[in-house]
Image (cartoon, rainbow, N blue to C red; front, side, top):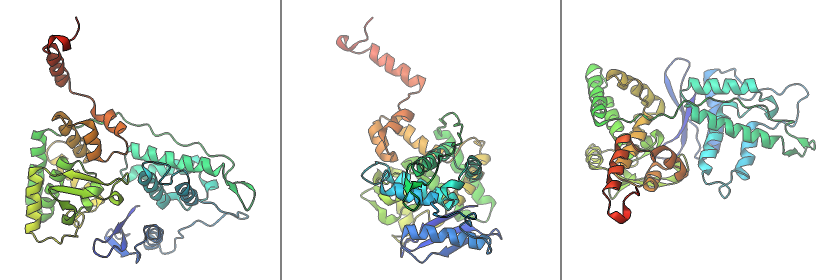
Length: 368
């Protein structure tokens, strides 16, 4: 079970979106512009809708007092170790903590066992989260529990937790290196056209086709691509606010020629300037649902939608863009990530560079 907390583009009021027990998608206004309050209310609304008799917080065991929840631990970390002046990627840490809190943040730190964390991993996998994301969130939980074992409860004079439990290890699969070729790109877009003709959602598939091209040319994360508006595009550049990125760092991405033509098409459709171009029609879940049909249509079942972002960066690198610039465009929290993933070259590129080295002037030629 999962839900999404979103902010309305017009008035800034948050709402929660989820699939109800009847299988229908529901949206409920949370009546607040405060993100922290919205996250608390969203959890309450979600559980109340799914089971009117459910309680959001578990009842404390008999004799248990001075509760200190995982969410309390995260809040304290946000004020200390994870404060803005302590870490570069503050938004990533905070975002992970908020996502974890929606699932198990209400649990007292003393009730978080290895079994609880294994179930947390299973739930994350059921939602389709990647191994890397799950491993990172387990790391955040581990950090919070270790701190809880160090912090003193002023009411008892003892630590909130005697000892942190062992944290499950997630075996990471080999790093994916799937790049969409130009021929495969044509196949993906043709698949969208075929699916549009087959059903009664032609406009939705047309828009999804544009979304895939946007991903291939900008390398934006799904959430970033779903959130931008026409008002965010100025001087042939799309600007992404820090509040809308995973790392909390604002970024600017120049648009390709075909994306500029796409923007003109959207403007001709009289879309409101403050309305999310794609996000007003899709959510993350809908994007995943539609994507699941596209690769199967053209024999690319082993491709993920995130591979489009990887493809964008790989194409930039192959065309001579520096790794520092790629890091800025992708919005990596540190250039180290970019260097680890994109500094490699295809064997053909290595041969080409070797031949260039051999034909260099004498004072630059390889010794031998």
